[in-house]
Length: 156
Image (cartoon, rainbow, N blue to C red; front, side, top):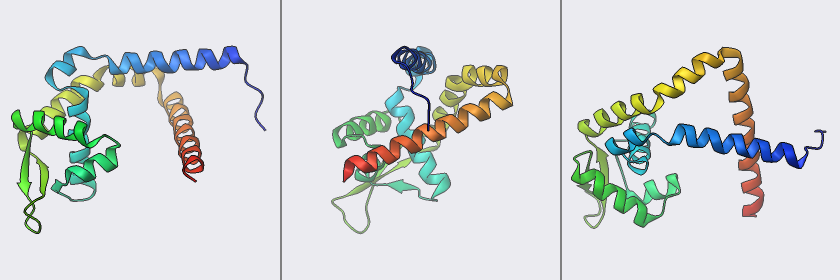
């Protein structure tokens, strides 16, 4: 069984977790190029393309898989489409529906933003070293599993 964690230790953990989120999430120069919502939606489309070999995705699927509301997905897609980073393609089976596909320009801007956004993170990782990064990864995996199991328990 785990040792009892003091309230002070929990507060310190939350403080540093929040601080890390602010450090990694506050890249204003990246947000000018590509806002977070657009960055993560493009990341989702790229993941579908690479891992599942799917070129186009229904907006409802994007909403379902990313846990974003349909209006938020629509708003983000509208912005990405205006910039030429995605295109909407009519569904051949049901002409009332359309799918979304990332463009080459969308892939390019995502890759540029990714490099910019995560160069500082890579610097931190290199300074921590392989052993500490592996320890952190194991801890993060455990946190995600605990959260998923808690979520499943709440869904019952």
